[in-house]
Image 1 (spheres, helix red, strand yellow):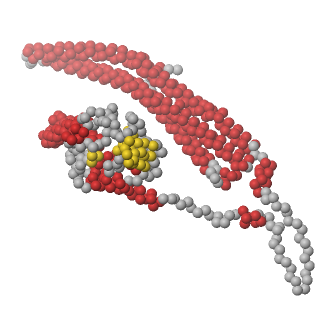
Image 2 (spheres, one colour):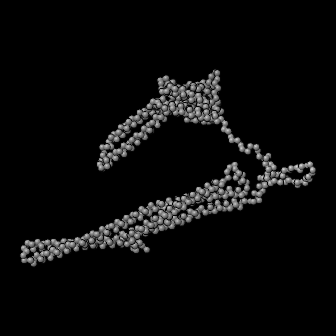
Image 3 (cartoon, one colour):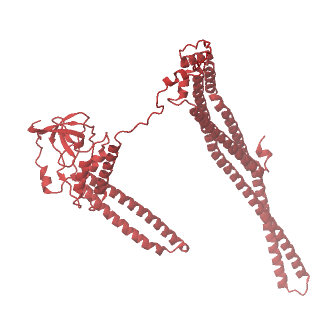
Length: 578
């Protein structure tokens, strides 16, 4: 049965019906979603319950697992955890196979329904417009006919009146003819509109509306079919996990069947059997004058007091473990904090704008960070400028919203800020290029930096040396970050003497002045350092100059700096060649 032929006049009712169908799909989707949430919460609660009753390590409950009943309960808890996992699977499948698909389908269904009813309203408006045109032409025809009759009657009265001049009669005759012509034209127009309306009405009720309603019917049938498929999937999701749920229940049943009371009874005997013989008969003790009867200790008690005192060690409470070296550890932390604060003051403290008081690598990082910050500020200013420019354009098109001239001072200010920031970027990029040009490449051999880096504060080098002397080597707590912080005292001196120091070509192999043994492991990631392992023997080729670093050599090709506090140095009286 087709909607187009049977329900051609039920446009509004079909609109309500299809809307209620969409609401039904939404309600069913909400139902499945709430069911999924229930499954998730249920699985979570079941898992928490299983975890709660799991035996704790080194506890009385763990000792009780030697009984078959306790082991069965533990197996039940594990199966229960797997059982909860299947409810999570149900929730996931409901979400992926039903909820997600229905939400996507609802979006498509609403769009399709909106399109069909839009076409229906458009057709309805067109036929109503044609009807209005027909009624208008009909009323015009009726009005023109009445005007023609009145003009004809007026002409006849004028023609019969002997007192009226011939000119007035002729004028009345022409007026009557004109009115008759207008009535004829209106009749022809009315006839044309009527024919057109009948054709459009026939096409509307037998072609357009049936086609639209047929599409709506097909859409509604697809919706109903889709709901049916979702309901079937809803059941299949539960059915898919039934085999695994059945296995979980079988596991619980098997665990329950594995309980052996006799075995547990034997285990109780094995656990608590004392090995003592039952007490013998109590002998009769007669009373004599002047003699007191002996007081004997009863051995008939069922408690285990016989061996309890012997088995229980004195001082049932064990003393808490004392952490060794607490004072040393606090001192070490204090020293590390002091070192970090000094280094932070040297790195982040007041200094030249180009960070020339820092070592090259630290300076490069500072300059790059400064450039990045400036670029962010430039982008921010440009975004604000674009927004103000758009606002000015809106003001120009709509003066009632604001005065365009009021934005100009802010735009000029932003342009000046951007220009200033760009010049700052160019300045810092020049300094960065200078630093990157001076930094040694990875192919260059590691070289010791020539001396202490001068800072504006004359006490900074003294503070750094004190930090190096106070730094102790904790149990593996020396990090690369600390070594990079210590380098704030050392840098490439920007003097001609420094440039000449490394312009002599290849360096001569330095002689060894002693040996050393690594007492800690050190990972040398920075340029000029060398990695060592604990207990490794190395040659010393340059002793500590007061900056906390010693230059060592492993073989003819591997040499570099290690922290002095990480090695035990033994200098020789006579230097020998490596």
